[in-house]
Length: 167
Image 1 (cartoon, helix red, strand yellow):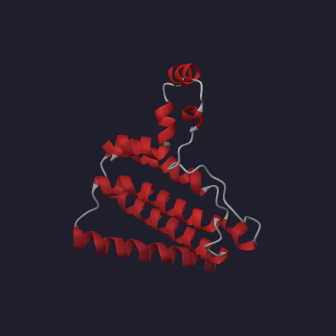
Image 2 (cartoon, rainbow, N blue to C red):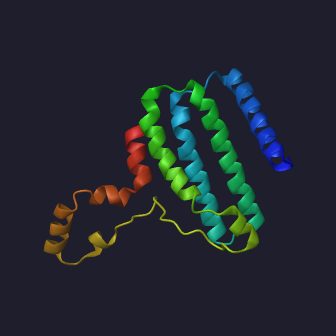
């Protein structure tokens, strides 16, 4: 076993042991906590990306933050695998897709080498389709709103849509 694999295994075992101790103190992980693992990971990752893009985090700090978030999400999801009910699988999958999509945009090696100076993504907390509201022609705005029945959903962003269903 290579030293890198050994250290990853050791970190995972320590994390799982910590989770087991925490679970004993506060009881098993609830379904809601398990649903929120990917959501919280997404929010933490999004915040770290915003800070990195604004140059408020150095390359090493950002890479460490991404690694910490990824490890925490993986460890908690491993623990949740044994405790959550199948009823929440749709919500977990929706948050997982959102988290994984954002996580795939961060290439840690490229960040550390300086080849990825920023991470491009659509911030779901912003109004993604504000030009509909800014159109001066009332009739055109009305027709667009009818044609795009999901315009309000687009404005809310994916995270808000999933939150409405799952939280």
